[in-house]
Length: 214
Image 1 (cartoon, helix red, strand yellow):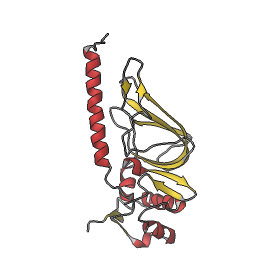
Image 2 (image 1 turned 135 degrees about the vertical axis):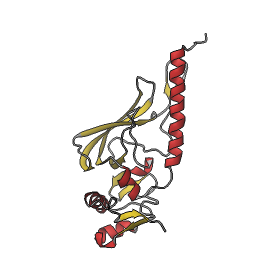
Image 3 (image 1 turned 45 degrees about the horizontal axis):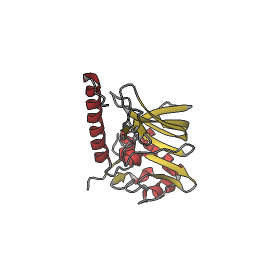
Image 4 (image 1 turned 120 degrees about the vertical axis):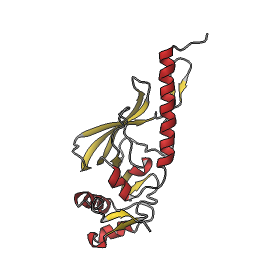
């Protein structure tokens, strides 16, 4: 027996398909290398903490999401304490809808992925106006896993300090060492310290830390 969808359902599926196409296009565009200037300049929140929970679902409008709860140990930017929960587009894995269909709208490749119990630093964009979803700046490049080896994003920090110009008098020895990193983990405290100084000192706003235009 074939099930027919009514006009409202067809409209909802059409809108969802358009959203999914736009999301994928945005993901492809955002996969360019982003550096520390991009991360600081474009983030609304910068949070350090431990991933307390990761679930997925489909909201009332039919939009698939992954929900992440972070137990915040430090708000590097923003007024956040305790647990912070946000949703990004896509399911953790394909979902059987129970009506003979499978929802394949999983988290797009290149986006941040999360594991319960991991310590992380997140550079978060503003919530999307219509969906309320929230992603990390630069997708997987704006989420850093913290371990004994240091802090590293899903691109192994490639390009993190590339094409960045900065007033050398602003940097201490540890920050200078961090800025020389081409890829691989960076010292967590030195990296966080660099980001804090950039925010508190308004380095980007005053042009003391910027994209290298050469």
